[in-house]
Amino acid sequence: MTERPNLGATAAPVGGYSDDYTHAGSHVGQARDPSDVSVGQLMGDISRDLSTLMRQELELAKAELKQEAAKAAQGAGMLGGAGLAGYFLVLFLSLALAWALSAPVGDGWAHLIVGVLWGLVAATLFLLGRKRLQQVNPKPEQTVETVSEIPSALKPNA
Image (cartoon, rainbow, N blue to C red; front, side):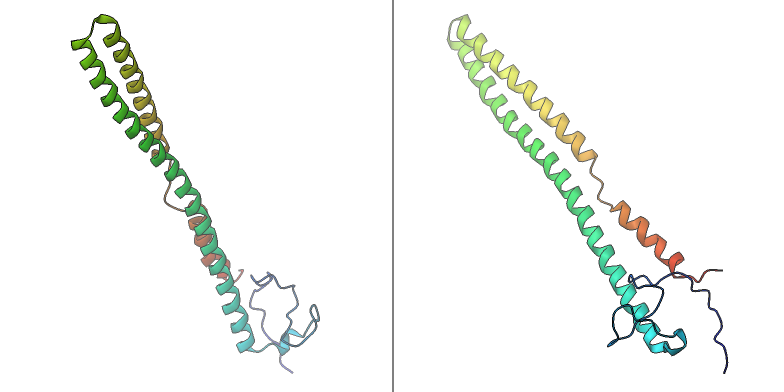
């Protein structure tokens, strides 16, 4: 009987199997002799494990992109708030100017103060919204990192 060469595969397969291979129809955990494993079965295991790995990486990428989309939505909401505040700025400054030109000094100045306050609100919301949007990272960093580790994990141990 000829011995099979050690191909350097010391780690468990990616799919979460134990050190012993199991085949279809056997009881879970029942070990089989590695010499009984065909190349086709090994290729099937590798294919299944790679498929599972890619699905998991895709799910990770989806989760990361969802997080970044939530950040972008917050920033866009603040910019929308800045737009609304800008609208009120124009409205109240227009009213203040009208009152300042047509009414005695008291009413016009009161409306002008309200307009200036809305201007401060608009500026604050704009700056906060812009800051949030600058923090958005559209690249799924964790996924890129783990995908870059796949080729080295597939190489046999030296």
